[in-house]
Image 1: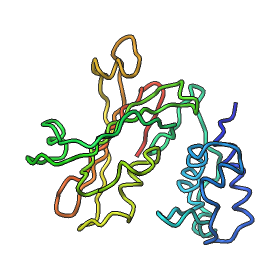
Image 2: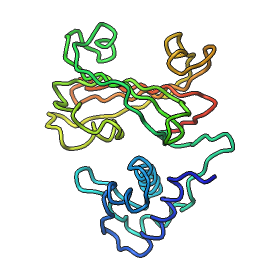
Image 3: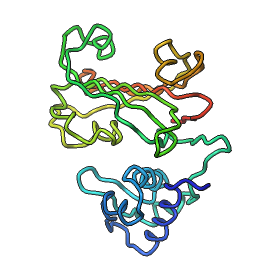
Length: 236
C-alpha cells in the first residue's frame, strides 16, 4: 500500500505545477487539514519536495515554490520504498514520538560529548522513531544534548519537528554561525539499546551522529540517532 506521505507528495506536485516560482504553499497545519492527515505526514512530503529541488523552505516564513529552471534538472520521481519498507534519504523519514525532555546539569558523559570541562545546563531530549504513524514499528532511538544557555526555551518548542532544522533556524541569537557535521557509523546495540528497541538480542545498528559547532569551536549540541540496520538506510 502506498504510504500516506507519498500520496500527499503526488498531490502537491500537481498543485505546484499550477503555481509560480516564489509563491508560498499553505502552512503544514492547513495542508494537513486539507489532506486529512497528520502534520508529520505533510512534513515528510514537504521534505521530499525540498530534497528534489521543487520547493524552498525558509524558517519562520514557510515553503515556497522553487524556480522552474533550477529544478528542471531534478528527477521528479515519487518517493520510493524498498520491499522491506526501508527509505533512503539523508535523514530517514520516520514518525517521531517524544519520550522525554528535561533541563539538567550535564553529567560527565554529556560534557565529553560537548567537549567541555564546565557543567552547563543542557536540554536532554529522547525520541523514538517509527515507520508508521501508529507508532507500532519502532526502528530507531534518538538522544539530543543541547546547550540550554545557547538555545533558551527550546523545550517549549514543537519537539516532533526536525531538531537539526530547529537548531539551524535564525530564531536563536547566536554569536557565531553554526557549522553542522554528520557522521554515519555501524555499531552494535548495547544492553540498554537492545531493551529500548524491544530486541531479543543485540543487533547491528546504524548510528547517525550530528554535531553543531560555532565558529570558535564551541560545541552547541550533539544529536545521536541509532536505527535498526535492516530497516533503515542512510546516505549523506
